[in-house]
Length: 476
Image (cartoon, rainbow, N blue to C red):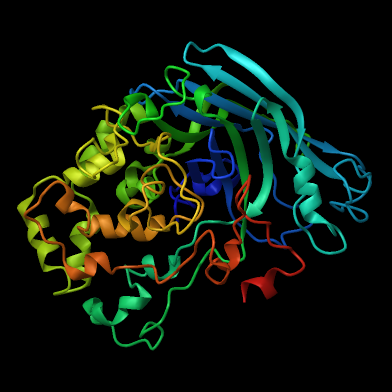
């Protein structure tokens, strides 16, 4: 749900559909930042014989803005190439894949990495970098972690990349949210539209709709001083140069020509952006359906055109209607028509100094949907909260985004009014605003709470993808 199938057109083009983007100071290499962009939503692990891969006709980019104008100052571009080694078999592999050069692996991908600076100057920094295969099962990929290790590639001093399949790290109860916000832990308070007790929600935990599925991830870890405006490593949280904005995009060439020969086509012309993602849930929950595909085509610098939907989010008006009597203070606040300054700051400008003691991720007055990361805030290496800043952990969302942050709960609570007192001291959030939840938990250290995400403590942080052979066993 962070950005899975979030717009009508991109839902038809999964290899170009960005699902999640993460940006955080690397806990195991704190002088670096890790940037991760996920694509290809809701991959069934057992999806053979044509297993999932990146699009070889898609330009994937991770962008960094370090001067607050909503335009990229540093961009990492990724282009993928396919190779079929045996044209006479229908199989993805004809035997166990024991290395990235194993001749039994029939369809493989490599990629190039290019760095583009603010002047538009491009520098090729890697080519022919191998992706690992998908995690098929114990016969086809018997030592899968070894294949992943071999695919993690150093491309410069303290710089490494990885591109390939990973376990889906985003957790959310999609079935409850899109059943008119019928959150399972609060179902009994949802008395609208003639709802009766279904027996499925009372005292129930949420259901993780993304359990047991995979994604394709592009991850790059780079020194902090390669991303900041003054090429330094800021040490003060209040230093404006400490804050960077991050988002990801996918683009396709303007023209696709189909030949008479089946399956043969050519692409030409300039690249046109078809997908983007900064803050989780922005396009999914904030932008109206009629504007979602248009939003995907825009640069963050133009996001003031969507600010009215942030200032008066539809979900904030719906919650008091869907849960009568549960959100009376929010209902009164919505009725007043006053814009939500807290949400405008969290999602479009960053939080200025003085709002949250010891914290800021303000990038200036330009309204732009980006993850905003203060690189001077050290990573939390013990007792991290998956509720990020509202859980007392400034190293988490909305200070960038870590793979385990419970962004769905954080943002729904914010929309419900939990963050309004930061800018309106007289507002008292409804009790439900601080309790509303997906009914799901996950975290970086508690093994029992990690569920199917199985996060790693080191690069690339997202867990080993679910095996096709064990797919339904793992998801059950």
